[in-house]
Length: 252
Image (cartoon, rainbow, N blue to C red; front, top):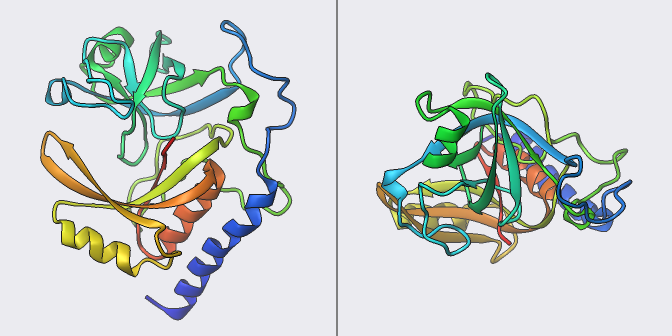
C-alpha cells in the first residue's frame, strides 16, 4: 500500500471526529409519526431471502428465526421496525418486522423470511429489486453539516476494485444509534485477530466476534464506536482505501 493511499485513508478516518459535534435530530421532523402516515425513510436495492438452513437459529434480537413468520433482516434499522417492502417488478407490497441483521452481500439491503418472500412473489427468483419504506420517530435520525460533510450515502459499501456496483437508486436518510463497520469475516480465528491488530484505529475499537451460520463458525472483525450511520459510512469509505470492503451495521 502506498504512502499516499494510507494518508488519504487516515485523513478520512480522522474526519469522523469532526462529525460528532453535528449529530442531532433531523431537520423538519415534528416528532414521532403514527401508523398509517407517510413514510419518512426509504431505501432501494435488492432483496434476498433465507430459509430452512437458518430455521430455529437465534436472530439478532434473541428470537428464534421462524421462516414462516413475516420478518426480515436489515443492517441498520432499529430492531422491531415495521417496514413495507415493495416489489419493483410487480408493485406487490408486504409488511415485515425487522428482527435480525444482514444481508452482508454487496447490493442487497434486506433478507426476507421464506414466508415474506413468498408473499412478495420473490421466493422463486431469489433476488429482486425492492423499495423499503418505514415510519420512524424524529429521534431516530441524525443530521450533519451538509457544507462540510462528504456525500457518502448511509450504508455505503466500500467495494474492492472491479466488483459490481450495488443496485441502489435511493439512499435513505442517515440514522442515529450505535454503529460499527464490519471489515472482514474469517473461518480461522487467528486470521481475524491478525487483521484486527493491524487496523489503524483506537485501542479497543476493533473487535473479533464469533458468528454461526449454516456453514459453521465465522469470526467477524468489526470496528465500533460510531454514533451515527453517516460516521460509520465515512469510516467504511476510509477502510476501502486500505483495501478492506466494509459493511455498516447497527449494534443497538
